[in-house]
Length: 246
Image (tube, helix red, strand yellow):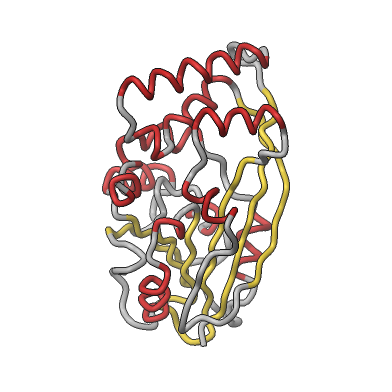
């Protein structure tokens, strides 16, 4: 089931693109601060629709490639971030030559990988002194209505993993450093429904479970007074990690 969930997002690529938030530029910049001087080649692995790719591509002189196992997600990415080369692959099987990139980053994706194998494979593709960066946008469940939202949709694999501790990264990468940012974005009822529809648990759920979740979300949004173009601020905590290759 985990493999089915990990590769389920392409079926809802449009909802993923519309419903998921972008990454704060400062968090992405922090992930890459430890790259050697003059570095510019970055691979976005598990790139999905390009939420992280588009931030990476804004850096002057950056040479970015995007890797994802799902061709439908990559098709959406090519429309969102034209000109970035795309390749099918995974963190455990990268379509990249040895020591060919200065950094590999994963947004909302490390919780789907086998960390020991992925660390070794990424270490093969990253030059010595290069960086592995991991980043997640997490809804801030300290806010009551957000906590209710999560209860209805179910906690994600990322939320469950990070609740248990920091992600595991292995050789040839050194110790993990971490940082966090708190922010919010205005969302409408439709955006919240599309965000829910893009989650792996819901994509792979039976139709009666999808209907139950949709109905409970509608009840919550009614309670919040969300109708039409009315917005509410959805708070996030972005958690970023980085490790340097030996």
